Length: 394
Image (cartoon, rainbow, N blue to C red; front, side, top):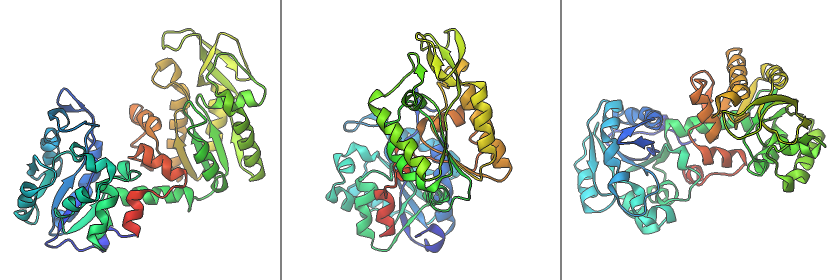
């Protein structure tokens, strides 16, 4: 891999694609973890005698607007880097070029929101060429956008020849995914949750040859239970995917992969935290009840599998964890993963809702790695080569 430590930054101006798409509420950043994640790369380049030009998007603006200006996060970046960060209210053009030209080693410049320009999301060649004038070397440290064929992640790279590399964050993401999909120490266990089988079909097909155990939880488990002849009450079910579920179970059996489904559930009559809760055998849920979380017997079975694993992937919650009454299954799985990690297992948590659950319950600090990219993580697990990674490797 083309990495930071194999690259010289002395008197170079690094044009760095970061992912500073942070949540902002009333002008306050509510989660700065993406800025924290990229700070190691920025500090390293500065310490190596380089200067940094940072480019990112924020939100999904339609044209320029103050609400989505990266000026709103300058102070937070400065605070975390312990360096005064300069800001350019333009993304490309003469002013940006002039500010870059005046940059000295050890200095940082943040450009205005990339998505104020249509050329960013369309991967426009002319926009990318203008961006390329703002650095002498290109660094991609934005895994969250690596699956996009955007100007700043894919097109711009061709203007830098061999002067390109991954940042620490993106390097770590690639290494962590490889530890699951290519170098996983057996037994390898994948825990897939969430509401829909349809969103996980490609992932399941890609990882089945590489794993030993597949734990299926959350709403998607009811499609499998229905496929096995179970009565699931009014639980969520993709009836059009029942044949797919049957095919997955058959393929798993052929490949020697053990599938673990819930055996009991905590159910509610209404989709709310205030509903009455009742436990059922998952194959016999009463008509007006909806399964919303794994039950206690399921927790024990999942725990045993996880504790016997050396490599663990967790993608998707085990129940409606946003409701306190139905968060027990997700919490139980998280605690089991932490315990297995302490015993020496490698654990990777990735995908929007599982990351949200890990952070909500404080698991994120105790697993081996938490992925920073939702869509990028999912596409990687599907076996796709991401444009932002491909452009650096080639």
